[in-house]
Amino acid sequence: MVKNKMKNLGCKRHKIIVLVNIGENKKQDLQVASQCVWDTKTDDSLHLTHITNDVYVVVNVFAIYQP
Image (tube, rainbow, N blue to C red; front, top):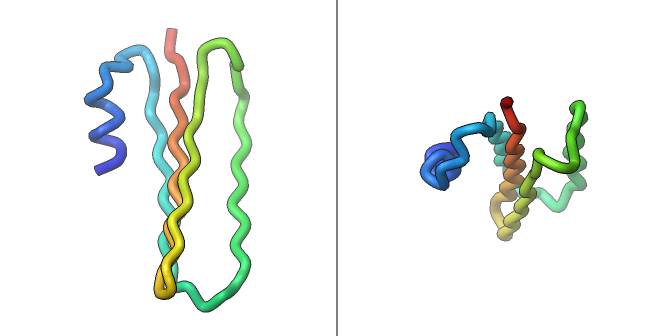
């Protein structure tokens, strides 16, 4: 769903990568990390977190320019 909405933005020269973590919220800590080769002029990212009493959701979206 997230990836399809990103594709509808018309970024035809970008590769869209979406990582979603969903889990049960038991008051635990969670750390999410990623690493890649990055061009600050053309690449971008978006990070969203949503937490309720029952679940947590972490969404990472990366737009990598493809020449």
